[in-house]
Amino acid sequence: MRRRDFLYLTSGVVLSSGFLGSCSQDLARQEIATKTRLENIGLQLSTVTSLMMKDFEGTLARVAEIGYSEVEFSAMGFLGRPADYVQQLLTKK
Image (cartoon, rainbow, N blue to C red; front, side, top):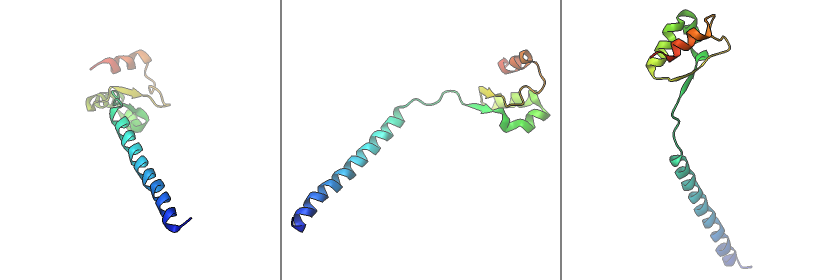
């Protein structure tokens, strides 16, 4: 095989792989853009444990005020409060 033939054959492979790679990246971007966004973003309350220990009710109220509609309690639970009381706090707006 002559050098010229080799370069001709391999340049097609290199160019097509670059073209296919860019096409697949474009498809991936389009797929990400068409996916729906998350509607509910929550807060893991372990990130504010020190605040919860000082002011349980006030911290929950502030978290809701900031805009979090979902929360997940840490392993510390409700810090000694009854579940029905905490449920009332969470449903109050």
